[in-house]
Structure formats: structure tokens, C-alpha cells
Length: 225
Image (cartoon, rainbow, N blue to C red; front, side, top):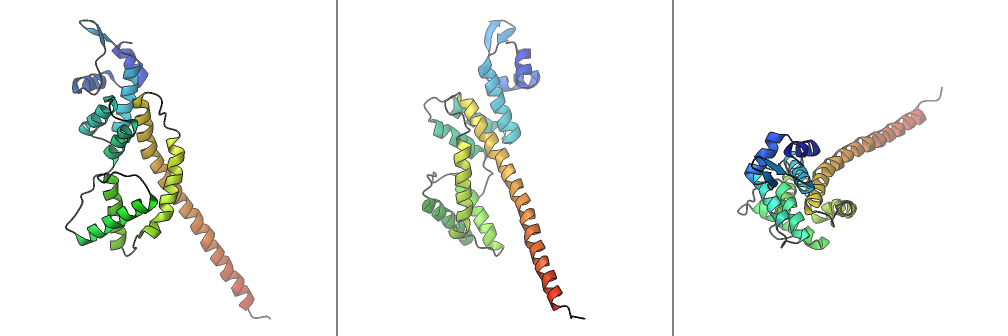
């Protein structure tokens, strides 16, 4: 297909495609003349992945280039490729190793991961992300011990087992990474929204029940005429 057809198939404007070509994010097409190149389905998949990393993952070009390099490196396992994408979309957290509160929070995060038996790299940014959340809860007077976090971990593990089953592992790497990024980011938002909806519903149920109990008691305490 020509670049105009590639644009139509991918939904990416031609000037943007040319920019990705110049930046090396998109492989060159097969040159058929001095001014024309042909593109294929691999280019469509690559553009879909770039858009997912850029628009959903909110990654800068430098991080996108790193993820794409992992996708193109056939010597890397699929686990490593997906891990590169996961680490890229993780928010940046600045560790504070000289801060006693930080060290305690990081130790609590590491302890929970170890107790769960999860296989997480020592340098995984998600360790620091969890430690930051633990530290924040501690400072707000809501200590987050491993015991308190375990129900969240169990729920997360159950969800991930289902999510991993939706990632097409046997197809092109671009497709798998695209599914991972979209699933992680968008399903994360869905989970957050569903939790807030559940909070509202539970609050209504609990406080309506309490009010009903008070009304019943008031009726019992009302003097008999």
C-alpha cells in the first residue's frame, strides 16, 4: 500500500507518518521508485503500537523508541519485551534512600511482594511506586502493612490472570505489547471507576440501613397515647 493508504488504514495523518519515519520509529517501506514506497500490514501494526504508547501510555518519544527497540530485538524473550513496556508506562518515582520513612515503606513493599511469592525484578519501578503509596498512607495516619494490602494483592492477581489470557502471545510482538499497554492503562481506569461506583453503592446501603434502624428504634420509643 502507498503512504496515503497506510494513513487511511491506520488513522495516522501522512505528516505524522513521515515524522515517525524520520525518527526511526517506523521502518522504511519498500522503495519502488525514487519518490514512492510500498508499506504492508507490519507498518499498520507498528503505527497502532506507537499510537497506543503515545496516546494511551502517554510516553515521550525516547521511551517509545526504547519499547520499540525491545519489540524488534528477537533475542529478547516475550517476558522481557512486555516488562520493558510495563516499566515504561510506570509513573516516575524518586526514591529517598536517606529517608527513614522511605526505607521502612520500601521494606514493607518488598516484604509483601516476597510473601506473595511474586517474581518481580529488584530494580522494577513498581516496587518504588508501591513504597510511595505505603509511605503516603503512613503519613496520613493509615498504616499500610502487608496484611492490610493483601486483599488488594489477591484481587489484583485474580484480575491479571484474566487479563493475561486476552494478550495475543503467539502473534506479532507489536500486537501483544499494544494489548498490554491498552489493557493496563484503560483497565486500570475502569477498575478505579468501578471501585468508586461500588463505594457509592455500599455507602447508600450502609447508611440507609442505619437510618432505617434509627427510625425503627424511634418508633419503638414513641410514647403510647
